[in-house]
Amino acid sequence: IEANASEGWSPIQGAFWRAGGIAPDLELADVLPHFTDLAIDTIEAHPNADDATPLMLYLAYPAPHTPWLPSPKFAGKSKVDSYGDFVMMVDHEIGRVLGALKQQDMERDTIVIFTSDNGPVWYENDTERYQHDSAGGFRGMKADAWEAGHRMPFIVRWPGRANASSSTDHLVCFTDLMATFADIWETELPQNAGPDSHSFLPALLQQPFQQDSKRTEFVMRAGSKSTMTIREGDWKLITGLGSGGFSKPSRIPPKPGGPTGQLYNLKNDPAEANNLYQDHPDIVQRLQKRMKQIVDDGRSR
Image (cartoon, rainbow, N blue to C red):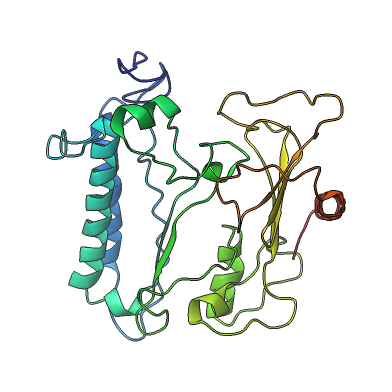
């Protein structure tokens, strides 16, 4: 298959793909609905009985990652060009999966978790063109150390257990799914399993956490692989200047006498507009020490 790009978008947006091998019968525009078809087939093939073997369905959609290929049904339906159209199509495909659960009478016995893997590739000129901010007011985009690089919606539907329309400010990392599922099934994880997995089941059930079981921090590396981040409570430390990812500039050399990193209070400044690195050297030092400890230990649980 030949490489492809879309006029009017950056080289990594739109109907973008690289040159290379492709299966003879593969049509790129069919990939998203095909994933849904397979998910529905799996649901419909599962025996729906009280003593049935539990079903774990992991549906990792390739969308709305590029290539943005909305079907004719959705082309032009949004006000955000092919990207908005493709997001609408993703919503529709998820609706098909939820409909299959209801059709099979599995709706009330199924935990549905909906989330994403990273922020959008959405530049400032895209926001200006379409009057639409895909990052929802957070700073940056995919791969950045800033919040829009990794802060994702995390939506759970668990009838009869998790209260509908409720919300929590509990800190969750995807690694926490393992410990949470083990907690739900009352299975104790071995000491060497899930080294960075903390159960958030009490947050789902709106119950208090046991002592020292609640996640209060997490450490991650930005897309540049040279910038580290630690979040602890309301405080967030980034070990360099710049985005650390796709947003330009990725890296900014420190100026004499200026800050060498970034410190933000996300409660007061979720847009990360006010760098407090030089105002709170004690917090910077504490977070640097804790981050090094977690990295050196290779685990945080």
